[in-house]
Length: 94
Image (cartoon, rainbow, N blue to C red):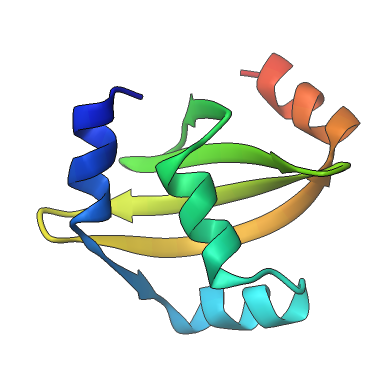
């Protein structure tokens, strides 16, 4: 992701859906970790229905985040922890 694109993302506010809020709590994921994955991803892969999917490593785990970008916001759809092995499998399956 280019610096210009990253700066444009940071200007948008993040909307956390009820579903996403429940998943974050259930999976012990902090919103700051989600923001870091979105703004500074290690991997970006296509998702379905005009959504974006990014992954970022945090220690021995990988945070997999799916969100939808609108003109003014980023709508968090869901986030889940993956093992590094699961991360590579998800990327290879694409």
